[in-house]
Image 1 (cartoon, rainbow, N blue to C red):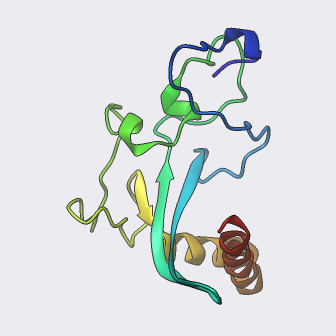
Image 2 (cartoon, rainbow, N blue to C red; image 1 turned 180 degrees about the horizontal axis):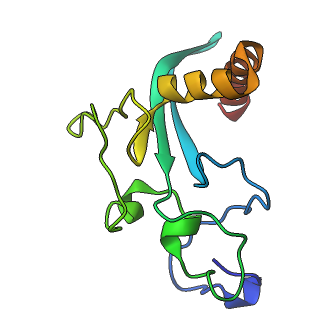
Length: 144
């Protein structure tokens, strides 16, 4: 993580993304969503959303970035390839590690998208969860 483009190496591969200043947290942890879409036709455009996916949580509780924690990858990056090396990484109950499918319960650093929408529904209401699912589908269409 860098605050200035001057700190970015031009000779090494990089990942560029905008940091969300006030992310939605799950029990104090940042998370991301991995959603899957199948494209079966381009003309006409035909997409199918897979009814499940992954929610990947950081393994260190989130704190706003500052000079002391900017390098804490377990706090700021949700990549499973990074967080699985954290001492706080938890497989949780029901995780199918071979298939990579997140678990259906409330534990673990990798959970299912179905679980996530139940969590959203409990926290913000069923209508909000349904609206979010619809908006995520629209985002997939726009991305393709």
